[in-house]
Length: 76
Image (cartoon, rainbow, N blue to C red):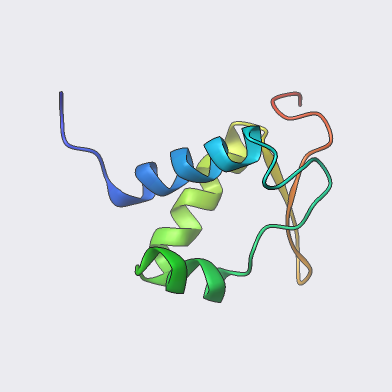
């Protein structure tokens, strides 16, 4: 199995936490600062993980407000 990038691991972890109900639909994810501290990584790593979740249709970003779990994850 090829090595995985840290941002992929973080995206998978956040997706699992969302699916487990820790972050229900419509809820706001922790801030970039909180996530960098939690995962002990830099902001660009968190940004990349957030991009993966957004592309998968799991989250949506509201500029200047935050990242939210979509009401219907996976639907575009």
